Image (cartoon, rainbow, N blue to C red; front, side, top):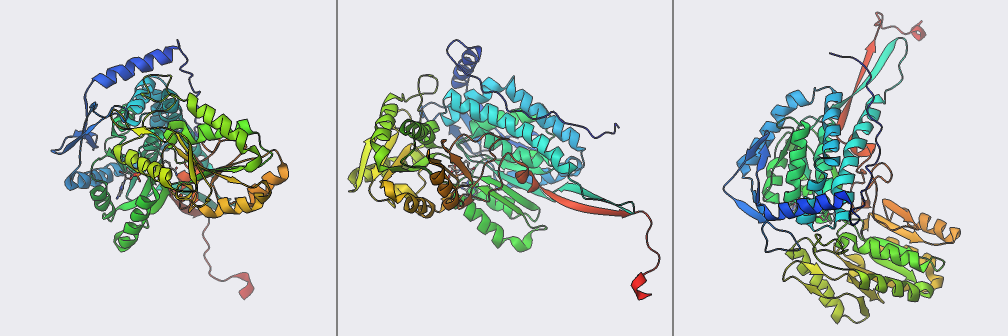
Length: 541
Ligand code: NAD
């Protein structure tokens, strides 16, 4: 066995490829997309490294082409979920004591597999399963997931290096143990990177995991599982189960060995999980760690001194990229009256130039929303806005689900700053604007702070430093990720650790050391070299 204080490669962000016409990456991803579109796949459960097929199945379809079937996935029974727990606990015996450099090697390998041989596949799978255009797929499923894996390895070693002071008489050491039990990772549909990171970050720190991907993301989750297996994640360390979320959660969280949940998704679901943990608290062997990154109602507030073209561009990108289905997407804007005419003109021009359709046609900036229930919800809010007084739709407003779940990017202007779409998370391409009087800057900042229960992302635009400073102070608790003169989306691992507070989550900042601390339980070891032999202290003299 070799000894050494090993140094891991310094993490750098994976460069984003351009996919410009004629580029080799564009050709490769389109070829892969076409092949995957035609093939029919099966996604089994993964328990103890084995593929498990059950009697109950469901089909998977692209949101932009919902009559086309990409394949089938198998749904877990209660017994399967119980097997996943047993298998994880069995795997823990070896995994938790495996030297850290072996774990690092596995996840660094996973990053390289994604950067190279699996890049086109994970991107094409994300385009098909979640209806992302190639740029949105590349920054998510390739680059962000690669970044999570590389940076987390580096952060793990930085944490392990954090050690207390010692003296010549006593040596103090901290061991960063994995949690006792298993971690339950629950992931949302909208980011393939999050789906990969939530199980991987806990496993990297020596934990065993049962992972439940969103039913709407299983197609690309399968590629992640293939990468984990090829990278060498041992059997039972990350188990993937799909099916009824309620049954799966109830079964996992009833186990006395449940030691933490790593959740990303909506606020209501997370609150239900927290409640269940509370109800079961007496049954657990250890207090479970609860990490949840949840909903948002993210804002842009523009001062009268801001540049209208920059504000309009931030709105166009921040609200409508990936159909507004980012937890960080701008969905309420506060624009000062004197610049609104220009901002509106630029914004409406931009929206008119958007093309909408399948991601296979790379001219399309906008694709479909994830599923029928999301489509119906968004359509109902748009219909309501068409009827409401005090509200005007200045762009979009149409929708069509005959082939795919297409909603036109829609801008609502309201005279009521507490109008329903200024407060409620819709999670789609609908942006609401409130125009405020130029002289009500401070009042508007308080309005921004008090309008929503969430506090995920927010952006302020101004060329006036005093106005910016006021915004930074008044909005201190209104966003976990706060942007100055930039759109509120597009956080990069290692540069802008991501997460929000209030109803937006526990703010444990994915892609940072803070998050990894949640998956370890330090043990302090003090070793005294010459132990005392007399209880009397000198003062007793
Ligand atoms: P969702 O809450 O519907 O689903 C998230 C996960 O929870 C899925 O795996 C789902 O199957 C599971 N789930 C659903 N009901 C459950 C139950 N009763 N018990 C246990 N698990 C259950 O969210 P979604 O539609 O997949 O994703 C969109 C939501 O996620 C939005 O609210 C968005 O803001 C949020 N989100 C937040 C962040 C962040 O970092 N804060 C990132 C991405 C998405």
